[in-house]
Image (cartoon, rainbow, N blue to C red; front, side, top):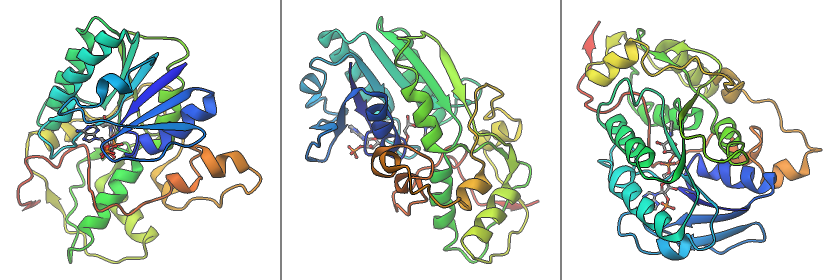
Length: 297
Ligand SMILES: NC(=O)c1ccc[n+]([C@@H]2O[C@H](COP(=O)([O-])OP(=O)(O)OC[C@H]3O[C@@H](n4cnc5c(N)ncnc54)[C@H](OP(=O)(O)O)[C@@H]3O)[C@@H](O)[C@H]2O)c1
């Protein structure tokens, strides 16, 4: 079975591609950058906004893992028109299963980026294709990058009233990889991290792990998305859930040296591919849109 992965170079894609290889699937990986194929992964050039390269990318494909996104600051250009373009190409190619990754809370807090995700979910559900939607909570790796960016500031204002349920992208990838064997579910499922923590614990654990000191004055983040997050709309009780806590991610145990396959190829949570990265291309979910200056709480 051949699976096309869009967003294969992203945070989740970087873990999903090896997870699918490990499951024994043939993997075709889409990117707007030209990359050399390997023994395990066929890289193909394509752009979801222009639609160029999609027909070739979808040739002899049995399922699509649609992860590509233009992120919270991308005005939904990949999530909505890009998804529409992908659906049309998938119909033409007769692809039986389209799996889309979305964000927990898209249905309860359809604001900004989450509204784009919800619209894409609707397009997929009404596409006539076999489909599955997996909504995830924010990834450890994305929050890590966001906090690194904020740490350039002299202080990190924290809104203690906000709950977070961060999840490891490697565990999300394993969940997604496991969804292809059974075919389209034709429903939305959720996947979240093992713990709910507040912003203070999120930030202070991160500062400790990175050996940094910053004052954390209490504030109240404004905006509709933060209000929804405060009300718990971006959390999920769904099971199974991830097992790797924010603390475990930031203070990881050393990798098992006997696991050669994991260290070379897989989405093992301890593999180098899943350790904190410092990509300046910052994306975060769960509340930075409509961000205004915090007010003292
Ligand atoms: N990050 C989180 O905390 C989080 C939480 C919950 C759900 N999700 C969802 O999980 C999925 C993956 O998120 P992520 O954080 O892994 O994404 P990401 O790291 O921001 O990566 C975005 C990917 O989209 C691709 N892309 C962007 N524009 C494209 C275009 N015009 N045509 C084709 N590909 C394009 C990029 O590929 P190239 O640049 O190589 O073309 C890149 O691989 C998304 O659906 C996201 O909404 C993310």
